[in-house]
Image (cartoon, rainbow, N blue to C red):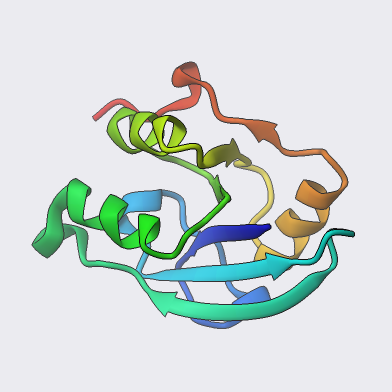
Length: 121
């Protein structure tokens, strides 16, 4: 399973998570084995929302072949596009660190994002 976490910093598992998916400068990409142990951790620069727009950011993340995204905030258009493409979107607004939110995710303590959770702007 490949999980993408939008981040403010490029420090991998030590990164600070971003408050909003589309404007995150970095993406921490973690591949898990079948037992949900992390196998690889990569940091990828996100597409610039101001240049590429919402659609460009979505396309960039789709190109990473994510199975899941864990975000603190995400608008309705990306939530719908990811969901329709089979990418599970999870929401956690309490946990600022990537490593910590991934521990919660593996333990089943991070909820799927619903349309009610999506940002409205």
